Length: 183
Image 1 (cartoon, rainbow, N blue to C red):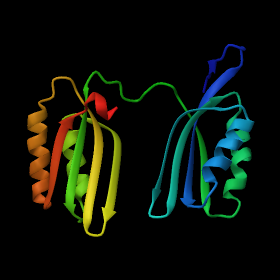
Image 2: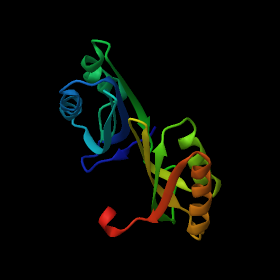
Image 3: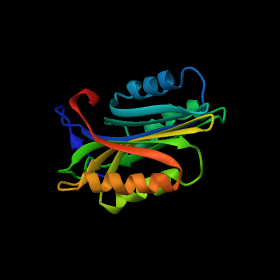
Image 4: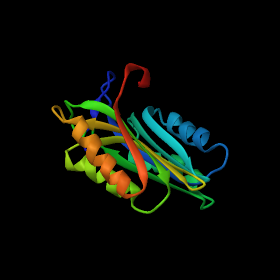
């Protein structure tokens, strides 16, 4: 992979770092400290807890190589409770968009197949899901997805097909455009 060049003439590559496993205090602090010690810049990150399991992905850039990053983060996985992976990635987005942002919300009684049926409707019209969160609270299931719909998409038709799929599963769905307050 060829890297970009920073102002000092040093090649800088982009890496995806994932950390998964049992939650405990200090995971983010230890991960970011290891990256900072190598002079890596964290450009994007997402982290969440999934029923007590920690999940984080970071995109970071710098002149350190994959092996150096793996060595710096190895202590995180030493006790076997966490898995750490480092992967080089490109700067080129895999999906360029000239579409519009929307938010899709689905809620109702939990059952198998909700995510699959709903996202199939979005995929069928060429929509891209840019963020997806689900939560289960007792028997209530909630899905919130940020979508990028292709230019010219008939959003009311998508809303109807998603609502029909949701009704078939005994849940409700709503689709709305993203507003400035949502950003």
